[in-house]
Every structure is written in structure tokens, then in C-alpha cells.
Image (cartoon, rainbow, N blue to C red; front, side):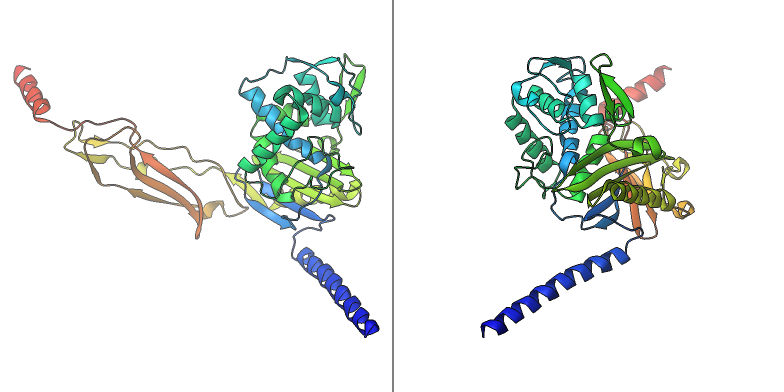
Length: 385
């Protein structure tokens, strides 16, 4: 009986493993490119649209790709004037003690936010990242709490940070997903100043004494690269969040758990190249000649011309630009008083049944109601003229 039960258990485990591999292989067969990784996502940075996904919700160790979130918090603090790039940060013993990739900061040493940011983005320096976090939040623990709070705000429901560096020798629950990394990468790219750092190939700090070479080889070898961050540990494997922009199309390729660095970069390039080959970014144009003035009933003005909004750029499959159509839904008349910003109608852009965007047509100014006093005043002015 024991031998029988043992055989059944072994058979069940073998079937489970086989089905897992078979399912993964089947999923790979349906992808437009070969994914040499545990998980991957290709996202449009402008719209957040997912173009390719593979095990996108599998929780994995992110290694130094973690640093995208610290970079986001620092960028937000700089843009909101909470801190300045010229601020000088005094390095703590905790920051100076960080292992792994580092610029060998010493306790008590001072360095600008600008140089610490550069060292974090370009060289993935753990000590520099920790120093920035402590400066922003007061302590590393407080900074990690901010990272998790911001992740929750962004809807990164499968992410939990235990530190700000991605070092995972002693962590058990420092996990995220390819989809969540794409989400925070997109948010970071909204801060244009970050590209000044993530596109650096070689630079230095300490007046040239410490050289920095970007860990992201795509910065040098892939056209249009805008960043963003690599990461490698034995637990995580080789990971990257790679972003690039061509002809107005900005894409993010997240690759997690590759067996080697070459697979990581080749998969990211394959995803990005496929995206650029199959999609284009266009900005629809509203035909203002199709939007007449709206009659104002009992208003001091008889008509009001709706303000024409500026549509945002949208991502579409290449070759379908001519298929974009617009549907205008506009009120024939509206009763006074009319408030500034009051919605008078909308314009909807579509390709087939797919909605590309809806834009409100609003009143550019207020229109008061016509009263007896106003009518009497107008009559009096006409008689006197």
C-alpha cells in the first residue's frame, strides 16, 4: 500500500510539472516574440495599454529594478520643490554600510541630491539610493513605508517592498510583478527630468574620481532608449524595465527572471522592436467645422460656441490611421444661465467598436439669464442711440 501511494503521489507530481511546462510553452507559442524569462510585459507609456503579457501577475524578486520606486519618490519630491537637486545630503552609517553595487560612500560624507540620483539611476548604487531615502523620509524604514504606500496608490496590488535597494539575501517577501513594474515605470517616466539620468551611458561623481557606467546596455546600443533600470541577483535572475521612444511612441518592456543578462536584453529589445513595428501614436484632430454654436434659451447672449478640446495622443495598430472616426454629440440648445465649463456635448473617437477617447465640449464662459431689467436696459439704449 505504501509503495502504491508513493507511486500515485509521484505520478501526480509529474503530471503537475508536465502541465505547468506545457501551459507555459503554450503561452509562449501565442506570443509575438520569444520570451526568455519568467515573466514579461510590454506597455504603452502614454496610455498604459498592455500590448504583450506573459505571467504578468507572477510575484517575483525584482532585484535592483526595485529602485524605480525610490527614483519616482525622489523625482516627485524634486518636481514639487520639496527637495532640490542642489541639496547636500550627509551620509549615515547605515547608508555607507550597504553592500552590492555602490559608490563607496563614507559615513559623514556629503553629496548632492543630483549626484546621488545619478549614482542610483546610472550605477544602481545601493548606498546612494539609501542616502536619498533617508534624506527624503528621515530613515530607511520610513522610506520603505513610503514606497509601499505609493505602490498601493498606483494600484500595484501584488507588490511589497522590504527595502529600497532590491538586495534580497535576507528578504522573503520583497516581491513584485512584471505588470506592477510597468505601472511604476510609466509613472516615473511622467517626470521628464528622470530621463536626464537614465539615458547617461558614462559619467562620474566626486569631481571625476568615481566613474559611473550605466548597467543598462540598451542606453548605448538601442535606438531611442529612455531608460530605465536593470537588476540582478541569484534569487531574481536578470531583470530589466527598458523604455524607448521612437516617432512619438513611448514603450516600456519589463523582463523578469531571465537566466542571463543576454537573454534579458534580447527579450527587451525583441518586445520593443515588435511594438514599434506594429503600433504608432497619433493625435486625433477634432473637426471644428462640425461643431456649431449652441442656442442659449433666455440668455443675455443668443448663442455660445463650445470650446474645442485638444485630444491626447492614442496608440493604434499601424496602417489604421484612416479608420479613425469621430462622433459628435452636441446639445441643440441650452437654458440660461450657463456656467463656465458646463458640458454642452462630447466628441468620441473610435476605430470600429474600439473607443480611443472621449472629450467634453464645454462652455468657454458663463452666460447670464435674460431678465426684465436687462431687456428694459437694452430697449432704453436702443431708443437713445
